[in-house]
Amino acid sequence: MIAWFSRRYLDVLGSIYIYNEYRGYTAIDRVLEAVRARFPDDTELISAIEKHRADERKHYLMFRRWFERRNIMPLSVDRTFGHIDRFVEILFRTKIDQLDTQAVIDRDDMFEKLCRVISITEQRGFRQVEILLKNRFVRSDPFLERIFKIIHKDEPSHWAPYEGWLRTHGKRESKWWERSIDTFIHSELLFFKLPFLFLNPWTSRRSDWADADEQVNRRSASQPSQSAA
Image (tube, rainbow, N blue to C red):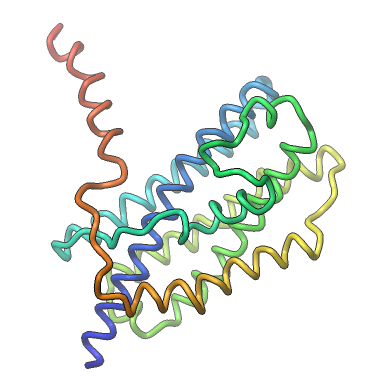
């Protein structure tokens, strides 16, 4: 019974994390688009956000390898289980994929709000990883524990560029109500959504990887050079 509970718990945990890591780096692509347009000469900020994006992609791939080692696909979860998805939807009243990038580029208040959302989300993620590293089920899986140790090491550099931009440009810090939204989203996931996913035997598994289209595009892009060779 304990063995089944542990497997199911880690399965649910890994499925939620791999979704959030994927949503993380694909959402940062939109942030980079805005930053490169607004601050083309701020190479330090652009470089820091590029590193954030690369780390999120790295974390996604680590979780993917973890599932591949177990010879199963992640459970099929959607934006309902995405922290950044929910935060953006509540504050911007739109889905991430429908966020008006041009408005973020043109308006200081929009970019400022986005910086706070990302910073709060990353700091929440850091605290959650610290809790998971003490979890006996996570510690029972050396490969998964190593993934969370890497995330714990990477995480502080992820909110730094956004906090730095806010300070440099004299923008306000996050308000109590913004942090309360973050707490609500986390509590909603922890106490309602995660247990539902854990107890729902009808949840299907993904039939492909979230980055499958990216891999196809990379292979297509490399074919002309291979032919030329």
